[in-house]
Structure formats: structure tokens, C-alpha cells
Amino acid sequence: MFIYYYEWGEAMRRKDDQKQLSIKQAVIKTILAEGFHGASISKIAKAAGVSPATVYVYYDSKDAMLRDIYKEYSEDIYTYVVKRVTREMDGKQLIESLVRSYYNYITEHGEVFYFVEQFSSCPALVNNCRNRHNRSQVGMLLDDLKKRQVIKNVDNITITALMFNPVKSIALQPEVRPEVKSGVLEDLIRMIQDALLKKQP
Image 1 (cartoon, one colour):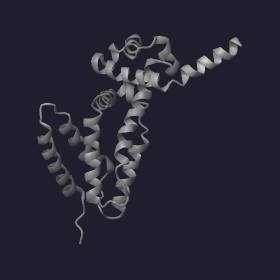
Image 2 (cartoon, one colour; image 1 turned 120 degrees about the vertical axis):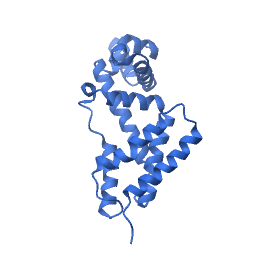
Image 3 (cartoon, rainbow, N blue to C red; image 1 turned 135 degrees about the vertical axis):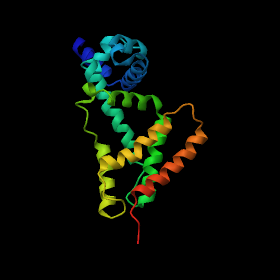
Image 4 (cartoon, helix red, strand yellow; image 1 turned 180 degrees about the vertical axis):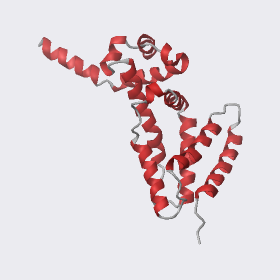
């Protein structure tokens, strides 16, 4: 009987999705406040309202925890973007959708985006986290457009830098009013379309 209750209790701890979500949210908040080195397991546990031992139920170490959460949320960004485009869109529509979706993700999920950006800028941490399925899906969309002669045959690294890096610059300026950002974003979309789309006969 003791073994039954022990195993059941351990299973419940492992499957407590809400508790794991609290830990992930605490990781992001603590990292943004304290930095990677200042965010100890004990601080993260306290912010999540759990014990340090509970954190280790979900993650083997601090490094493993940070990498797992980074992988999940960096995937989420591209999942969000990919879900909003379809193969039926023409080049102009697809570029607009990609740019707007990326901008909307940043404005709607600011803390998560800041965490991913901070992690991405630290080579020692991001070294083993380069497999991004949905980023590849964006690349496949771009490859398809190039194959169909819709956009110019430019390397996807250049295309994604041209589309996404300026969006970050616009979205991450807190002193600029939303209506001003909206106008700048419209201009940016047109500029990217002009730069990437092939002239149709």
C-alpha cells in the first residue's frame, strides 16, 4: 500500500503541468531581473512558489532547465508565425503576414521574447539549441516562393534578417507610441516587399 501511494504521488508531481508552467514563468522573470548568473534555482523556486527539490523533478540542472525552456519558447515564436501563413498566399501577402505576425508576437509576449533574445546572445548557452523545426518551416516557405519565381533567389539567412531584424528594432522601442510604430511597420512591409518580390511580367 505504501508503494502504491508513493508511486501515485510521484506521478502526480511529474504530471503537474500548472506547476511546471509556474516554474517556466519564474525562470523568465528571474532571468530578466537577475541575469543568467544571478538566477539561482532557489530564487527561481521561490518565485514559482515551489521548493528547489520540486524544480529538480522537472529539470536535471539549471543549464538543462534554461536550454529546455529556451528551445520551447524559441520554437513557439516560429510556431506562432508559421500558423498564420498558407501556401495559397501570394508573395506579397506572405511577406506581410510573416512581418506582422512576428511583430504581434513580440508585442503580445514581451517577456518571453526578451528571454529568448537574451539567451540567443549568449553562445555558451545557445550552443546546443540550434535545431528549430518551425524556423525550418519558414525556410521551406521561402524556398517554395523562390522555386515559383515569386521572390528573388537570395539566401534565406539574408531574407529572414531583412524581414525580422528591423521588426525587432521597431517593436522593442518602448518610448515610441503604438500608432507611430504601426505606421513605421507599414512602411517596412512595403520596403521588404519591394526588395524581395520579383517583378511580374
